[in-house]
Image (spheres, rainbow, N blue to C red):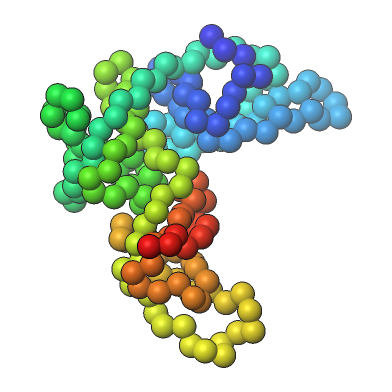
Length: 187
């Protein structure tokens, strides 16, 4: 059991027999009444997002999630195939289990798979990833004085808004939490 004062984003808790991942929380102290914690939770199994209010100091069950390193092999429809690098056992996860993280996973990269009671429940991607631009419209000189942007497509199929100087073949550093362009990486 943990107190609501110990909540952190990414922590997994168990309520009503279901697992939830804490996406965000806000400590609120109204002028009248007791303080409370307003949380945004993602149900691990369905991917559904709910808002839940906890009283300050309320106790909840923490779910102990183990992470194991797997290599991402390929995608087949809505299924993602991973391989344990030690035992070579393959594991299939669905888009629902992976969530929005699938946008930042490249083939043949090592990924941390979250396991709860030896069942896969999701993946952890790094805070930033480096992806190559595969499609980029040309920047037209004179469009803007400064600060212009355009949308490019990276190797995982995701569209990212970037400055006009980014071209096809460039490698970009992207923040996986926000999906935003951070910088162009030298080749």
